[in-house]
Length: 322
Image 1 (tube, rainbow, N blue to C red):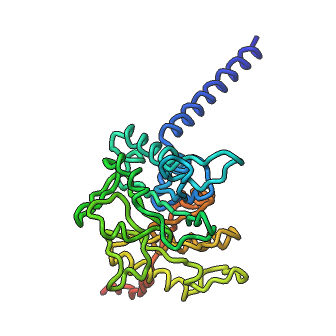
Image 2: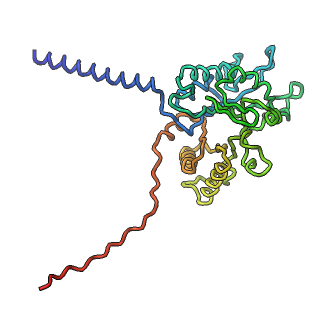
Image 3: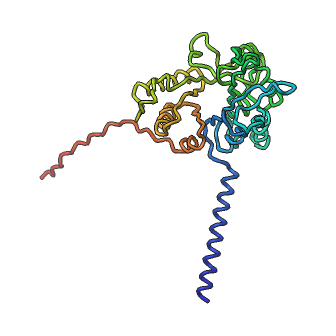
């Protein structure tokens, strides 16, 4: 009898534990993953739902690739993700814009992430369009008008440039890569997208902040990194160059995102991420969303400044007068 009571009590305790764990898990699912303020998921090769995947993982932005589909009645943009033979890739509107708009609509604050006021960064990279006759890549970039037709129905949730003023929205669209036609954006009085600039735009005559709020540059090439020579730690000169670039961009009111960051081997990738984080790079991007998310969830190590050790002098013992 006593043994049966003990068994029953143990079973009830186990059920209670499972219930508590289930409640904790359900609460975590409802809250979503921790917010990764500097994380950008690079989804040029997939998945087919890049925006929803990035948002669920807590990333502050996503980069997608698009190409023009001329087989339809009107040219539209499709993702560059890999698909089975004969199956078309999802359109940019149905795989990116619509899921993000749905998240914004159900959020009381009108943002992609709950309790986060900063806009979600949506970077769109254009795949070069081949000439239908020669097959060569066209020298001209993808026309912004094609993308603008898709963005305007979602205008209320997009960051807008209007008559020289930038009006923040829930989502900021930034066009990445060299295959966009810049002339359309430079002369527009009203638009819903911005350009990814270069560090040369910080100099006089470069693109203004209202056109290129984000600047980028291939980091490994700039630092002289050779993949055949692994860096166990960043050389002092490379660290100085990295931090000088970030300071100059921040002084001009720009955000920084570096390309060409080594993805292999893992220790080199982590070394680059660690240095970029220490240099306060605004956007750290990677195709490896799991590895990047784990890295960004780590607490930032505290930097203790050197302090001189106080010198304590021994006092002479008091002499009692007699």
